[in-house]
Amino acid sequence: MQEITISDKTFERFISEKQIAQRVAELGQLISEDYKDKNPLFLVLLKGAYVFASDLVKHFLHPCSISFFRLSSYKGMASSGVLSFKDVFDEDIEGRNIVVLEDIVDTGHTLSGFLPALNKLNPKSVKVVSLLSKPDVLQGKVEIDYLGFEIPPAFVVGYGLDFDEQGRNFPEIYQLKK
Ligand code: 5GP
Image (cartoon, rainbow, N blue to C red; front, top):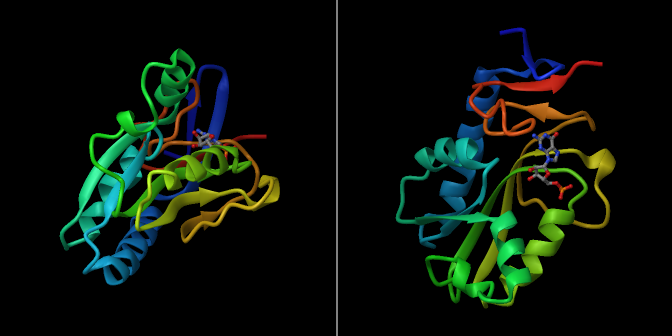
């Protein structure tokens, strides 16, 4: 589809299904090569990265495990003071080669808050994969080790990314129409 409408907003097609599939395959092959003997733990940041992650890991044909993490639930738990950061993971992080899978890095605040907390759990290594990045609005320094596409600072939906919880299901990426 050339355009989609969600609520009162119109989005136009920006990255096609074919372009996404090609880039995801390239990233998957790079990661496969780099991690073939490292039994990585892919840590998928929910909800936005779930579609990207499910396609990416199909290109990783070596031992690995996959876990999911929802930052918003961590925030809730942290404020309740009941569960620690460690408790929200269903696998041990200590000593593992962690590969964080993110949908998009915008200002970078999400990752610059999450990565130091993750590092406190003593992983062997941590690398970041992001499908998209908006370098023009990035604040501070966030290292993305494997990046799909650099995009301009306009709001995007589709391929897991939402607008008000809608639009995650579209197989292509759409950009807000000016
Ligand atoms: P940051 O903390 O880097 O500013 O933002 C990261 C998070 O904000 C992403 O994981 C994503 O959930 C959300 N986000 C940032 N830009 C966009 C965008 O253009 N579209 C959508 N759907 N979410 C975005």
